[in-house]
Image 1 (cartoon, one colour):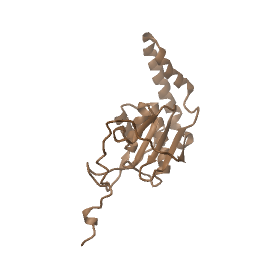
Image 2 (cartoon, one colour):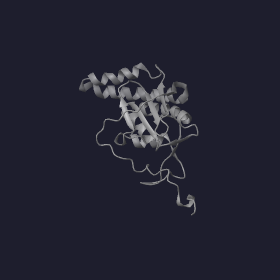
Image 3 (cartoon, helix red, strand yellow):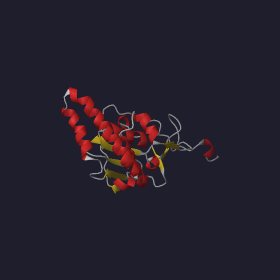
Image 4 (spheres, helix red, strand yellow):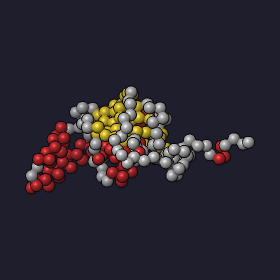
Length: 210
């Protein structure tokens, strides 16, 4: 498996429940994403590739500020989890949303500047055979399901190993700057994310003396 092409992410967070920015960054690998999501699937790989390309535009320094991002994707468990983990966006804070547009894509926006990017996967990169195998599960009779599930998993794993991981993210995922007006997330139980509201407060040793 050619894992040298898997992105590694450098992220910045706050240091406590009502904290300032941390004085150090953290490294996130694909293995970390798997622990959060539950399994390594083609969707998680594709989402990881796509997000890595978008981040290069929003954070050219290479450090992703997870206190300053909003994200939209298709309502996929894999794509949504990749976005939530890597951006810090969450439905319950009104910073993560979904749209029904099919495919692998994201809209990411920096809250502080409203700078936004859209990233998409090349049409045809993901095999139609796998998409068909996924869709066929819906109409399958009970007796067919074990074989169909095994075949689908094999197709997905072979594609990841023999195709996706032999490419670089920028080979098949492309991002562009867009104008985007964030719409209010329609979730009535939204709360305030208290761990970021004091992130810019200076530290006592940095305060000017009287």
